[in-house]
Length: 246
Image (cartoon, rainbow, N blue to C red; front, top):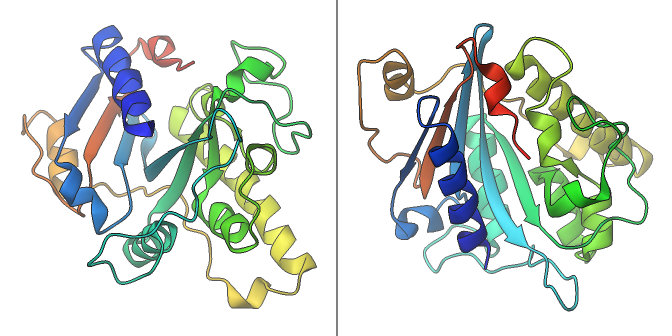
């Protein structure tokens, strides 16, 4: 299941980059009310980029993705994805879905040539695909939950952290802008643009205790926002090339 994939990926990341990556798990019950798995905060010399991630695994047999999963019993919405999107909007922070899949989209629409160091987009890189939470919500509502459709609406995860410029946070914002531009265009084509709120950008102002941790004033982060955990990446050091995620 997706928690195992997430745990294994984060464990490998934390072991490989002990000096630059901090991962802190909370409890699974804290996740249920917000629908989010993890909140990520990345810092470089140009500022911060923060976003929340909900992970889903494409069924290895059918390719179906459970974007219609029911919400927790005490949640304010019927579906987990609705809870996730509504909470991100209320907190004004970007929401992303990370899709774990052993499939590749037949019609990748957004991912062109891959950024350094991967070169042209490699089909194998679609094992971790990011999709805007608003896009996932639209696809779920229209019963388009197959891996081909969902992956075609996103981009490989590594695009987030392999920027063509010097700033990791600026690269994240460029990827999100590209995804958001595509989603808004679909809303306009279907006459639904006025019904949707603005898609949040990656947050630039971290919570106080996140900033304190990056600045060396704190060693432990207390749970907040009913999250399963938090990932902190410090790309402000000279060894930013070590933070290339695959």
